[in-house]
Image (cartoon, rainbow, N blue to C red; front, side):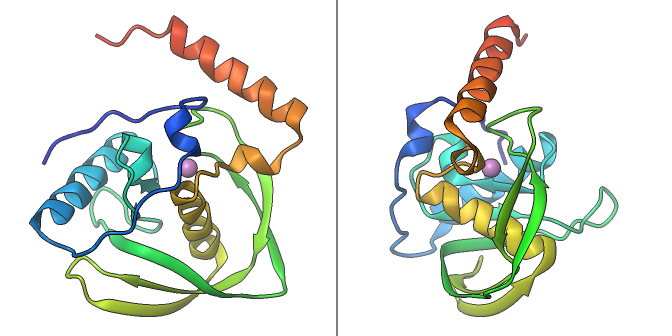
Amino acid sequence: MAKLDIINVPDPLLKTVSDPIGQVDAAVRQLMDDMLETMYAAPGIGLAAIQVGVQKRVIVLDIEGDDDERKPLFFVNPEVTWESPEFNVYNEGCLSVPEHYAEVERPAEVKIKYLDYDGKAQEQRVDGLMATCIQHEIDHLNGVVFLDYLSRLKRNMIIKKVQKADKETIIL
Ligand code: NI
């Protein structure tokens, strides 16, 4: 496995729509393994391939694992097929928007379909934090970050702060 570099806003790649995966082969599984290592190292609970500069519809999540017992989840070509009329609000963050958080309202429950790590078709109904996370990550595959739900003023302010912090950071 290899740790990958995470890109931050306002990298234009984060605004692009990612391509579907044709087949879950060894190369796709390698990408998922590398993304998982990158996410755990960050640390974060979710990562979309575009955040490591790869325009593929692949997501990794681990919302309940800890260092002792990890519970990784893999989603290839995930799609929301149903949304509940009820909403939830979570204070969201993002590995591509380091150290900034904002409340975002999303459907409280969704049905999703996707291919798993073995390429098997899955369908699942999720709620709570899981529903918010999967929607946040699917947004990434469509070129959307959580900042896009905020006012333009607030969004631009956060982007400027991230850019400034990136310029001041020396990674050795
Ligand atoms: Ni994110």
